[in-house]
Image (cartoon, rainbow, N blue to C red):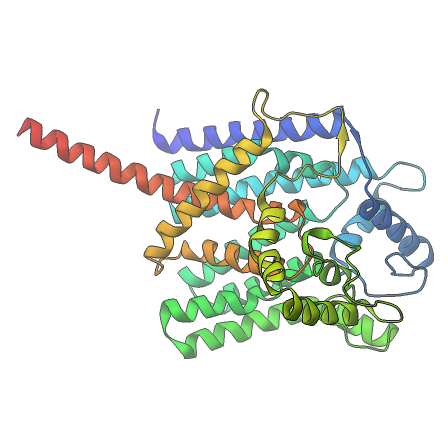
Amino acid sequence: MKRSKIVPIVLIAILLLAAYLRIDFVRSVAHVMPHDSINYDLMVRQLLEQGVYAYKDTSPNARVTPGYPLFMAAIYWLSDYQQNDPLPWVRMVQVMLSLLSVWMIYSITRRLSNAAGGLIAAFLAAIYPPFVWANGAILTEVLGIFLLLGHVWAQLRVYRAPTLLSALASGILLGLTVLVRPEFLPLIAVNYLFYWLWKRNAKEVLKLLALSIIGLALVLMPWWIRNAVTLDEWVLTATQSNPFKAGTYPYKNYDDGMVDEAGKTEMEVAVERLKTGFSTQPWLFIKWYTVGKLSYLYAHVYYGGGHAPFYNVIPGLHPDRIHHALLVLGVLAAVVILRRWRQISALLVVIVAAITLIRLGFVPEYRYNVMTMPLIIMIDCIVGVKAWQWLSARRRLHMSKIEG
């Protein structure tokens, strides 16, 4: 059978496997609703019934960006939520988005490597346990991964074929990502800084950056206008500062009593804690804001919102083992790519590094590593294919010398 026919057959088989695991998971277990999920549910019902957009409140606010709540609201409305439980519908739509993400991982990796690399990456994404469990959680991860991959795909198009449309699309997709996960906003600068270092053409970079900013602004503009009109203030993304404040407690010791918090806002407490901590206990805070938070971010897999009985995606293999293997190989692969950084695949490494550095500023949770894992899987497969090609070439050379 020709290779051109084998590749789509294998890809379809991988997508069917991914679909089976995800659908079987969401249908066969009882799903836990953590407090964030409960708050989203209450928020969406309040929005649909009272027209009030507010998170953990009954008065309008901008504590969370509207991407995921509006996504939920659309499904609630379509499923006639007052007569039917809308959460199974949300989970099934997330399954579809997760399958599209597997396909995008294949597509991006194939463009940066070859068909074999794309298929391996898709297979790993299909069976990586957190990508299955995340579909059961009423949280932002599945939608966020889907939109982030869409942005990465569009940004790579900007690098390969820089057109006005591709730059605009990249900005629009980043805007949609930011509406779900606001911490990704700095990628607009990171992407084009890397592009400038790569191309050294300031005029072209600035033109494309401007178009991406326009695309980003077009998506965020309704949110900005809503906040200006309803709240009488300009809010770039969201007003919730608790994750930043919570990140100032080394090793999550929330009772350390470092500063007097009475009568102060969360941001004021956070700033005072940083000043006090780095001046009086510099080693503790330096360690916490580097290896400490990295450990909290990447040491374990993300188990989704919680479920029972436990659904072991890969029987006989602890989920952390495949997670740790992907991480170790990812670090090695990133070093290999950065040694010759003037290649388009280096963008994936740059984005992972940027996201990780951003995360160090906030409270660390292993839930947050799931957003970088698609990129790490792609990095692994890109370098793995290159290593295989190099070894194969060496072997052919060695055999030719023996035969000669």
